[in-house]
Amino acid sequence: MLYRYTDLGILNGSAISGKGAYLGVAAINNAGQVTGTRIVDGSFHAFITNSSGQMTDLGTLGGDFSTATAINNAGQVTDYSQTTTSPTGHGNAFVTNSSGQMTDLGNDTQGWAINDAGQVTGSVSSVTDGNYNYHAIVINSNGQMTDLGTLGGDRSSGWAINNAGQVTGTAQITDGSDHAFVTDSNGQKTDLGTLGGSQSHGRAINNAGQVAGEAETADGSIHAFVTNSSGQMTDLGTLGDGHYMGVSDINNAGQIVGSFFKAPAAGAFVTNPTASFKYSGAFVTDNGVVKDLNSLVANSAGSTLISANGINDVGQITGTSILNGLIHAFLLTPVASCDANKDGKVNVTDLSIIYTAKNTVNPAYDLDGDGKVTVRDMRICVLKCNNANCQP
Figure 1 (cartoon, rainbow, N blue to C red):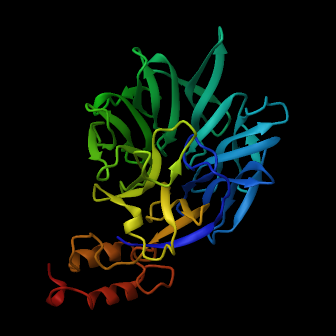
Figure 2 (figure 1 turned 90 degrees about the vertical axis):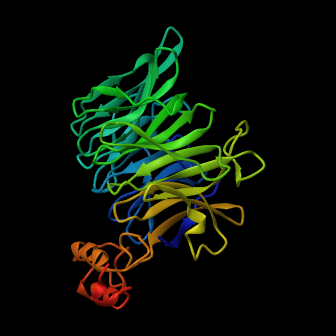
Figure 3 (figure 1 turned 60 degrees about the vertical axis):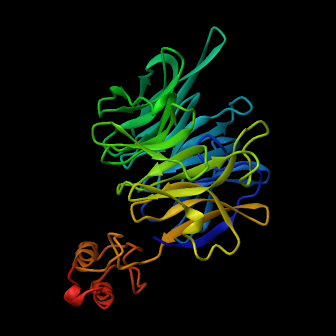
């Protein structure tokens, strides 16, 4: 699969995008709307784009800053914002309506993800006897909050939620290690374990219940993983000499995107002054194989993709890149191909896949570029078949 690069503009600053950071592009929905955080008059502000890539500032809850980490297919955005009464550097989770107006979801909350029903998952923090802790939560569209607890330790956070209400995230176990978890639709958690090491993190979940994240191996490396329907992890490995894989998203086709890190001598720049790793590039999985996105983009015009943070169900990817020392937001759109099942041949199997997508908006099969998959696209592919009568 190859991708067409679209520059969505300069974000400024020096921080890297992704969950847990401030500046950058965080997510994309199936309409191609992107959300994230940029600098406006010296402060962080959440933004949303329309399908043409034009940014709209979402403002704040009355304070100085806001950030955005997730968007659903209705265009609702969540993360958190400072309010008029928040202490410096603190804020509350919010969710936007279809007009982009923010609703405050409660004190000391943070929203990390939102599903199509408007349910938000994230965390709520508290201080007990001087100890700062936080718990994973789900906030329903009516504002009701459910504490998901931990796996026996003190802390947890919900990183993603699917349309069935299943949540994945990270929770502390009794020995203090962090483990990835997934809930059922009733909020009951299952510890997903690790890849032989002591820690793991569940970062994304699709509507089939597949969880993607990263986990420590027995030798201390951090590998990307994806689970099957039974919750068992499959090790997706790393990219060459990459030591650390950071997963951001998974779509309903099971494609995963994220970032990979190498030793300090390599990569674009350090994520913070004390970090031991640097962002080296963005990755996508193709039939379970991890690939460097920089090798799959033909028209990046000198930009280096450093993080991939969201992928939608038509395969569009958003994230951040560096060009001339500045951080840019980008959108990658799959270049249409007749080899729909990516087996290296064009035959009746591919035509059947494309026919199934007829009358939908899917850039991967829109061969004539008219914005929709039609019979004309199938006719183009018939002419590209490897064998007579498009036989396998």
